[in-house]
Every structure is written in structure tokens, then in C-alpha cells.
Length: 163
Ligand SMILES: [Zn+2]
Image (tube, rainbow, N blue to C red; front, side):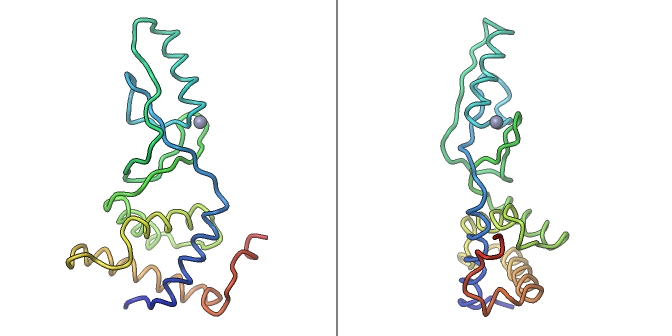
């Protein structure tokens, strides 16, 4: 069952209100080291120093700092800071599956941010009829959220939720 435009706008407003409460830093990694590991900038600098100290012949430097695509939202290996990226289609599918399985809590800012990323990457409508099963899962999840949290619809302002 499709989600109406009004419902989409309400959901987006709610996701945005939650997402605005969390901070994200640009994603960095270290060239010459395991590039699959993500760091915030201060931790990346520190890690490069450590690597250079223990291996003076190695060539290590901080890389990244721009937007990348990922299958999930990375966090810093050292301090756990949430890092910014955009989700791949596979990443969007995983997020929707996760929330269908474990439930979605609109009061969790991280969950709201996840959904905002999902919508930012996949949008609301399939392009050329592709990924139809993904979009039917997306609508299903949104319908569940709207049914469980009926206050989302008539209310105009969700910011009080976190105050
Ligand atoms: Zn860090």
C-alpha cells in the first residue's frame, strides 16, 4: 500500500527532527593501512602518528574527508563517533529489513537519521520499475510506523518529542 504525499511529508519531517539531534563527522581512513577502517579526523591523525612511530618506513597518511557510498553508516574505530556517508541500494535494503524485523522507534535520533539517509538515497518511487520489492518493503515499514504512531499525522510539530 502506497504512502500518500501528506504522509511522506510528515514522516520526512519526523525523521529530520530526530536526525538533527545527532552530529556526524566526515569519514576518513588511512592510506597504507586497512582502508576498510573508518576514523574521525582527530583519531585518524593520531592513528597515523602511532603507525609512523611503530613503522618509520611505512607510508601512512590520512585519506578521505569527502562523501562516500557505504552499505552502512560508519563510525570511528577509535572513539565511536558517527561518520557521514550516503547509503548504497544494498545499504537501504538492509536498513529497511532491519527495522521491519526489529521495529522502528521514532524517538531514537539514530533511527530517524538512518531513515533520512535511506530516503535520501533511494527516494520514494522506483525508477524504471526497478527494485519493486524494496519499495514495497519501504511502504510496508512506513505504514507500520504510521499505524503504531498515529500522533505523527495530525500533529505539525514533533520537536517537542525530544524536549
Ligand atoms: Zn574518532
